[in-house]
Amino acid sequence: MQQKQSIGVFDSGYGGLTILKEIVKELPQYDYVYLGDNARTPYGNRSFETVYQYTLQCVERLFAMNCNLVIIACNTASAKALRNIQQVDLPKKYPDKRVLGVIRPTTEIVGKYTKTGHVGVLGTKGTVASNSYPIEIEKFFPEVNVFQEACPMWVPLVENNEVNTIAADYFVKKNLDNLFAKSSKIDTIILGCTHYPLLAEKIKKYIPENLTLLSQGEIVAKSLADYLKRHSEIEYRCSKGGIIDFYTSDSAENFNNAASLFFGQEVKARHLDF
Ligand code: DGL
Image (cartoon, rainbow, N blue to C red; front, side):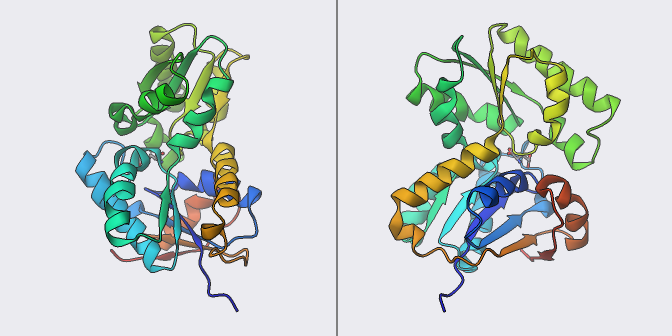
């Protein structure tokens, strides 16, 4: 029997479950390990060095659990840690392992959606400050203008289950107003944080109907499917049992209570010590 070699999916907390949900829909045959660093979440306001250290630790834990391929399903960690891990840590310590992020798949396709050439990006402070979205979009679609807005209150609203409150309306409207003040021609918005799909219905209340709202789950799932097709040397090492194991660095009980909101079905996690 083939030894279990799961695809690792990592996020600072729950947000990556919105990505895993779509990946599993697209590629149900593989085994997955999800790791949420809930004990140290949120990453959004933390320094570059801290996000890098936390992310590397989590990726290494997933490697130790026999994952050869890890998806960093967190924009903040993708923005701040992915490049260093890919360019420094993997070649030095793990030449046979691969780590992918969530920013590139979205930036590769965004130009196909915008007609005005004005794209909005909503993300955490860290993701916006890193400028990863404008830099990456420029590579694929140099003619596209990118306007960003940091929404530091959105993750706490989602994490605390305050999505259907007046407070959520207030902050969602406020940040969208700020974004459209930067350009009234925006016709495509990227939800550049894996928590934000849970606010999608609220966001739709405050944007024009014909505007395209891009959530990353499906995009990342399709991009992973394509990656595995192109990289048979990685694909053949991924075991195919359809099993998903969940781990959290915080209380498993708390995780289980909240995680189903993000994943869409019941989750039974185990605690992992760091
Ligand atoms: N889910 C993370 C992201 O996609 C943000 C959550 C956090 O701040 O830790 O950026």
